[in-house]
Amino acid sequence: MTNDLVMILAGGRGERLYPLTRDRAKPAVPFGGIYRIIDFALNNFINSGFYRIKVLTQFKSDSLNRHLARGFRLSPELGHYIDPVPAQMRTGESWYKGTADAIYQNLNLILDEDPRQVLIFGADHIYRMDVQQMLHYHKEMEADLTIAAIPRPAEEASSFGVLQVDREGRVLEFQEKVKNPKEMPSRRGWCLCSMGNYIFCRDILIDAVKRDAEMATSHDFGKDIIPSMIRTHRVYAYDFSTNRIPGCEDKEIGYWRDVGTIEAYFEANMDLVSVSPLLDLYNAEWPLRTCYNRYPPAKFVFANEAERRVGRATDSIVSEGCIISGGTVNRSILGPGARINSYSEVTDSILMKGVEIGRHARVRRAIIDSGIEVQPHEQIGFDEEADRKKYFVSPGGIVVIPKPLHKELDD
Image (cartoon, rainbow, N blue to C red; front, side, top):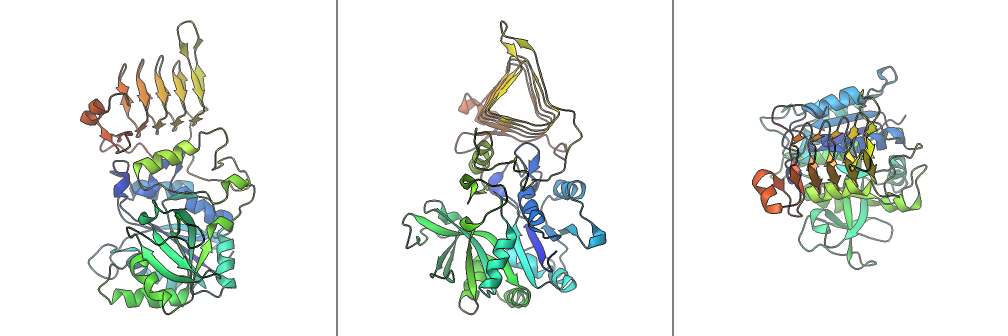
């Protein structure tokens, strides 16, 4: 066990992932059938040997708090914990103004725990990482701040912070979400992007956020803290593509997905159903824990080929408690307790907890949130104009049906 403190930022609104974030925090959005987005960050730390974890929450955090309480219970006798920390307005009459302000408003946690380093990570990306390797690099370079970074195509880079580094990895310049960011000199068409994961030396962090709090800034690490520290401190970039976890194959090295939009979220889920996925959920050497449901096993019933009434799922993930009753599922992800009734077809879709597809219904390229009942003979994803009159349709044509209001069915 290290003497370092982990602080996971899980308080963002997730506006670009609307309507999946209409009633829940972005880190609590279901992913891959039985998981939540935040599970990846949490398991990266647990598997890396970090057991002092504070999760800073803010907007619509009820389902996230329940998920943490029910699924992640570490040993308090050994000083291990995963503590949700709600926004408390400890420093004034405002919620978190930015990522740096979130840390500033919770400096008491750092002072109480007295860590050597503070690891500040986001809660809303899909990836696997041995964080000890990044910490080793941080110490080896005698860095004041280390930023996890990964090359991304230049056309995507405007959504991220972009770094320029020297041959040793020291950060020379940092651009936060600009329209035409600088490309990597050694790799044209690509930019070195920040993953939003940082390791700070404790005293450096405390001083930085205190000074920022006294200034008229946006109080954000990417916009304010990092650019100012480059001029005065040892700031280094850790190359995530060098990170290796036990049991991973070469194809998974460098896998990282930002699921900030409906299209990105959909594509990251669809990554999982390929025959040989880039992200292996079945790696027993790097387990992915979550809050498990008490459901019976999945069941497939009816094999009447003559009447085309066959319970079948191909190239799909089917969670516990699902019943595929004479319907057909292809290239889809079914959350716990979903039911597919006779003669229905589900293709290239994500169904969350408790979704029921009625007889003869057809669903294609859709995300259906918890507890929705698709009526018999209904067709979703085949007529975009008709879908837009009833549902949310993303710019890429993905139909999203949010869960019913006032119903907490995604625990």
